[in-house]
Length: 116
Image (spheres, rainbow, N blue to C red):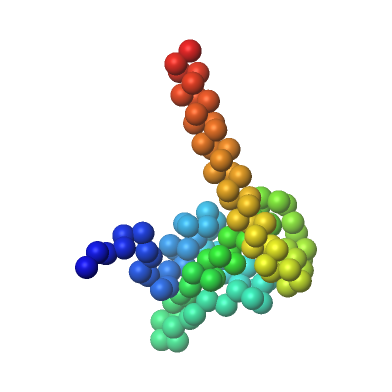
């Protein structure tokens, strides 16, 4: 039997892992939970530990894209997500792809400059 090494086996991520993955601090995540009703991570009742699913992380990436990258106010981002979640997700994916391509092009340019 062959193991799939690319598959993420973790169902939930801690707040510190999620904050590091998104690129914000933990207090920002807690604040966004209050501002965006769609964002509701699982909270264990005994020790109050937040656990973010992959769907929560995708929503956080969309929020990050709208607020931090595109400069939307929280109310405007909340409205965009409420009205057009699929379009906002797609927009976030396109933006991530463009940023990745830009970084690859910068890397290629620096390599070409080193050759010349």
